[in-house]
Length: 162
Image (cartoon, rainbow, N blue to C red; front, top):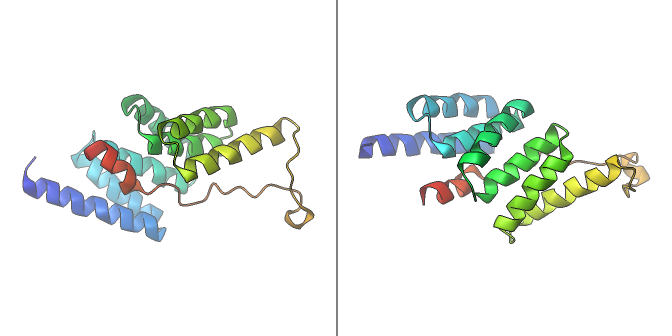
């Protein structure tokens, strides 16, 4: 890979991040797919694609991609955290809890992993007849926060390319 390739990749990936942060998920997906055409094994771009797919509501596709990433990137907390969010979105709460526990074990200082783990454990309790603790103001229903921004794509990239 030449310096020009690296610079082009970096600029393209920064554009993906800008689009993702701006909420322009369709454009971000197009951009990350262009990167993956040139760099098909780029883990950072594959992770970004999984994040984008989840944000677009394509949860099954996100889970499938993240399953491959979890197997290929052992020890990257952000991958496990995103995997937990995607699993939760498809209703695989027990699996989401397992992924989020792995994220917490890998990075015990991650507030977002702890928060997501707590929410998944809370969801699991509701599914098993536990008390949800929801007030009348929210109709007695949980207010999931799975639409939150989640981890920044670039933050995970330092673990892969640092």
